[in-house]
Image 1: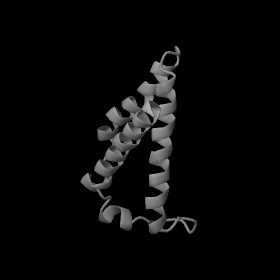
Image 2: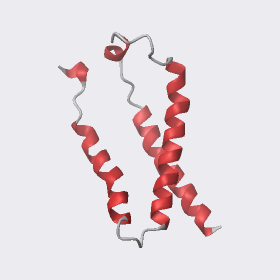
Image 3: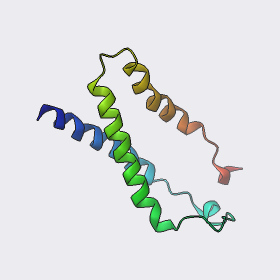
Image 4: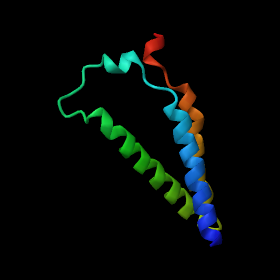
Length: 95
């Protein structure tokens, strides 16, 4: 039972990150892009990103379960580094 509490915590924290990111919609610049014919429909992005965030949470939880391994610290640091660089992305609408 204790393991599932930590899994729920991982899913909730990852879901919170996804929820915060979802508050910032791409805007009109994204709608104006010329997209290829194989571009997926807009309604597909919600389920796909939800699935990805759940998988990210589960994989992070699985690494955290083995945090005594020498590679676990590095594996857990990658998402933190990526999140730290996210604000550095250039917004195309600000140019």
